[in-house]
Image (tube, rainbow, N blue to C red; front, side, top):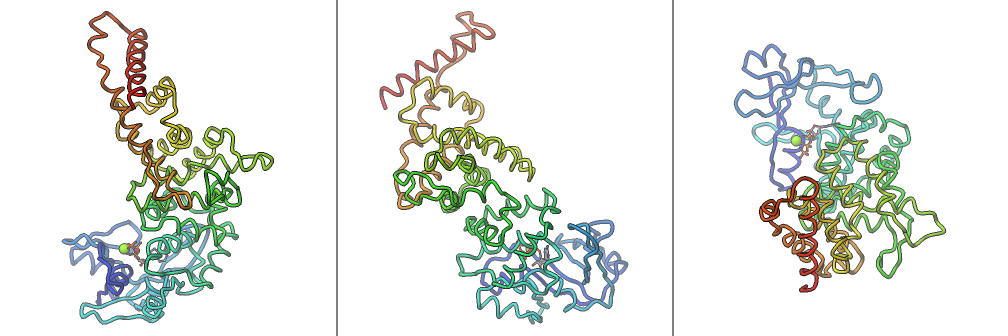
Length: 407
Ligand code: ATP
Ligand code: MG
């Protein structure tokens, strides 16, 4: 049997990028031979094994054929007859379809190295169109390598467009989509992921609520970039530049969905967009089965981001309501993430990226002030049950009044 490094490990070494996980392909071996060498099978009916020591993935060379909709709709064929070239041709991009032996001799039948130099994300063969997940993968790689100057080859974008129009994207499971979306949001330029999806028509299918923001104007005085879609991309860009968490990035992407619902007669104003957007945010959250912390923060940021921006003008009672809504006493981290998302929103405006955001420290200070209210003295005064709750609130309100006066 011959063993080769394939995929990302080869690509990233040639790009001079750190290689984290290594995928291997094994040519000329049977399942029995792999098991005899101590490899552990990954799935019951998939010719992929884990190395007994390193735990890295070793896949038998295989060919694939589409036999139905979605990912389950693949039949594959692995045998000792399948060649390295046959295995590589089923891969998505030319830069991912190179193999290397232990002497670093490159096998590159589909000119991945040429495309690396040309900074092109190009599909290997027309079979690309057989798996709709590849639309998301290419957009994710575009987000990752945009900084190196990579773009999607026009003919690949055309295939992605056809896939998006074919209805195949709807066959993707929430789990597979979320895995790509969440990884893409954590790349250096997540806004490129959304841009590429939009360009090929996939955004309209996957997240019509985000797609609808493009072409929707906002008041120029607050939003020099005007377009709500452009603003959303900038917010995402800021979130990546400030190394925000996935939770914050997800909230950034969805914070303004309500603006897509404003009737045109009301443009460029968006009255109550915060509240109107909630049902859209909920729908997107559920469509991709986003993790609970992502879902929760997206809804809270959607509802309260303008409160964040107006923090210094809020009445103490409104400030208290905000803190209560976030349960800042038990969930300090979630409020920090809210503040971060608000700040990214404010910075994601044309020409205002460097402007300071004093609201952040003001909100932190308010939360700290409210936290200083101790429960014990109130218990000692004999407050119980709902009365105790009311008494705590009154004390917090007092503290916040003083905080606002001093600020
Ligand atoms: P990463 O750095 O994100 O791990 P990678 O290229 O190694 O990038 P993997 O998801 O680890 O990506 O997949 C390993 C290889 O398997 C890819 O380089 C590609 O050749 C192939 N591959 C993975 N998923 C697909 C797919 N859906 N369609 C075609 N080829 C795929
Ligand atoms: Mg990999």
